[in-house]
Amino acid sequence: MFKRKDLLGLKDLTKDEITRIISLASDMKRKIDSPHLRDDSLKHSSIVTLFYENSTRTKVSFMMAAGFLGAKINDLGVATSSVNKGETLIDTGMNLDQMGINAMIVRHSMSGAAHVLARNVTSSVINAGDGTNEHPTQALLDLFTIHERLGGFDGIKVAIMGDITHSRVARSNVFGLIKLGAKVVLAGPSTLISESMRTLGAEITTKIPEAVADADVVMGLRIQKEREKAAPFPSLREYSSLFGITPEILKYAKKDALVMHPGPVNRGVELSADVIDGKQSVIYIQVKNGLAVRMAILQLLLGDRSAE
Ligand code: CP
Image (cartoon, rainbow, N blue to C red; front, side, top):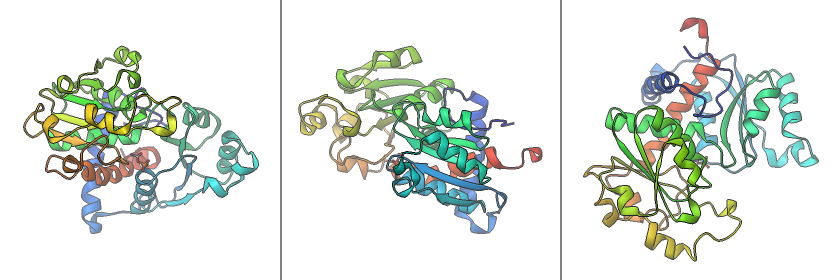
């Protein structure tokens, strides 16, 4: 059973709930691949996207996921909305609530924004990324991809590398992977790793070969220049030479280790181009799986729960 009003983060989800989403996403992927299997089970649902930060993958895949399930979906278009006249997130949400919106999908630069919205509206709220806190649908699609490729999580080693401090993707993945039984090693320059991640159960190192050694999954993270207050390293060139994932670095991992990245990728910075386009890369498969996972999430939050 999945009885939540909102999807705000993996910190709150149980192992069973995560497993339920992964399992339903598998069914949804079959619907994507076979249009004759699609249904309009959410035809009575109205959804709105509120993206206060830029997005390609998350926003478009939610729009498509809603369409595949028959829901009506609109994008608020924050840049041209009354947000520019000073309307707050809560007031915006309360107004949309009055229009009978069933789900609001929100991305915001403030950590905790989705939680604040969820407390103030009767509609479901889905966190599409809040500041440096969580990006649950990205982590769920990462978990789905790992499960699809490796068959499970028990005892696997996942090395996550790059801008750990600013990464909501890393935080959500750490919560999820550890609940599911994986070992997580976080690596990057000391200026981009917060010691607090150790308390979540992850190991931390600044040595990339050590992080990647015998890993089943090697995940790069985008350098988030927009969130850095001071330069954490001298230049992107120096970063890529010391911390970039190259074919030489991949040799430390297991032979068929998966290469992942949430996107957008800074080509040649976090990952070399030949790694991004190489046979171990599942970066574009992650994007396709994002659609399946978001269909599953919409179905679980908005679908007829009495049918479960
Ligand atoms: N991974 C991710 O969140 O991508 P977008 O910013 O394009 O949505």
